[in-house]
Image (cartoon, helix red, strand yellow):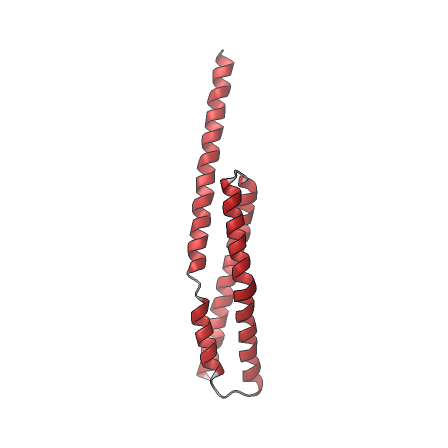
Length: 132
């Protein structure tokens, strides 16, 4: 009888730990979603459009074209992929696939860092072109 009670208590503790970890993952995923929403591609696009209106030739024109390409990559590839990774992680966490959800959350966090770096680099490049 004591063994049965011990097994039941152990099962309750394990289940509670799983629920706590699930909620922890979901909070982290929500924080990543909130951070992603802070990335404003429209502002970058407006800056790039402003630079395009300048009379450009040679290397400067190539730099603006590269900015446009990098912006397109950000909006068409990186951000949608990040959104998909976050949604997949959220679904996996809700379905108790916690290890897969944690792995996808970590991939999404890395993708978010890269997207932020791209945004920062685009902003710096636009500023540099505007100064010239």
